[in-house]
Image (cartoon, rainbow, N blue to C red; front, side, top):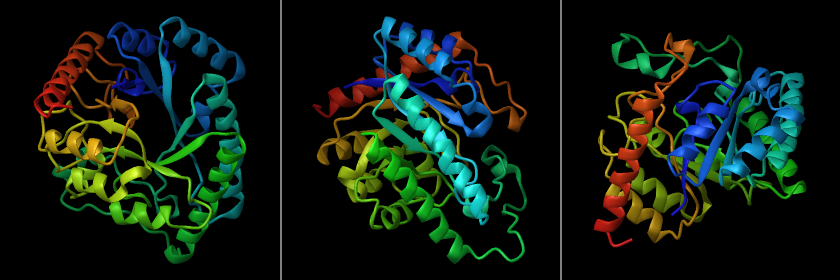
Length: 305
């Protein structure tokens, strides 16, 4: 089992040097990095990528996944979608320089609509998304598909793998939405980043997702939640059945890394968009990661895996 950890739980935004050092200090074999849009993409230039690669190599860490959230991928405006493809070309270069074989495609919401921070959902009387006048969502889905096919083609050309992350309210929000994407011509070799907290928050049984998506799961992000909003706690603190989840992953033959995405665990840095502190309390967060690994190891042992 290769354990990885999400750098953005330690610091929501780059630089990520301290996060990498902390993850290495925990004894993890892998790390996941994330690029949230065009502004953060500027950080991952040739010099930075070379430095980060050297740091990870010196710590015996490998980059198990580079997570990218493109701006404009589902925009109804063709020029904005084209710019998203151009950004993705830059991400391809970054992934190669950083030494990963997998890029995860982060959420694109229909028509690039803004989604309210999901942490507020339990306290909101009305939960909705502001749909622009005249937006043709049937056409927009096809436009998004074409953009994703361009991303997949670029990955194929450079010998990389592409995975789509399941995210509430996005185009890839649940099992059926994911399967509909994966059956499209031109996406036959695209997979999924299975985020346990995301899929259970949307109202699905997390282990059933595994059996249905099966061999198309390329990456796993482990976190727990209570199902009311999209918190990412350490396994065992919410409502998911992790015994069933690890057994399901074993049954479908998943052998990839398991990334702890504890972005709402005690000590985590969280989105400043939600008026939170983006810088984590490393001492508390490291403890959360140790407890998470101990819980998963207990479960694997209990299930004889």
